[in-house]
Length: 317
Image 1 (cartoon, helix red, strand yellow):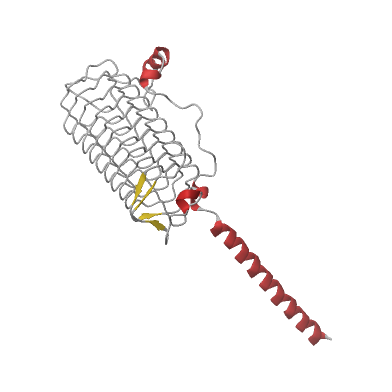
Image 2: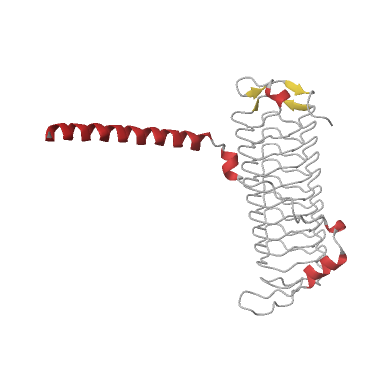
């Protein structure tokens, strides 16, 4: 009787183990079946309370943002900044910085809200953690500068140069970035929501992990850029140069790619729900594991790619 019970117990144990293994495999399959892009972006694109370009922002809002007194971390008042002797944490809000020559200067945590900073030469400078909200920085040179962790909300960066610069973790919501040159720039983990980035140049730049909802990228050049794990929903890439650009695991809901140059682009694992690829150019364009691929486009994919084809039967213009 004891031997029988032991055998029965052993049998039950084996059955339990097999059940656990089966459940684990099913759970693992469900986990693997969840697209990475859904894990990265579990919530819908946020289009609420978007910041608008300075041209469309009321004077009252501008004054409120610029005139707000912001103290240093120790509670002390910022020192008045001087163009001839820039220092960390200085307040430049009412200082004329047009055409200043600040090559290699060090202004960490500077306050430049509403400042006129046009045609300045600030190559190789360090401006980390600075506040450039509503600042007019048009035509200025910030090549090879460190502008990381800074705030550029509703700033005017028209024709600004940030080649080889670092802007990682910066806030550029509602910024006017028309014609910006950012070759090889680091834009990782930034927020560009509702910014204007038309006719700009960002070849080989890195935008990984950034948010760029409802951004105008019309005729902008991104050749060789990294745009992985980005939320680019509702953005417009009409006529953009996207050759060899990587969109791996990015969310592109309702994005426009009309007439875009997508030779060598990589949409592996991307969410292409509602995208418009009318008249876009494809050569070795990768769509491996992409989801929600438009029906007409999906029919052209061979071995995960579209090669030598121009999609002209897409969504309505």
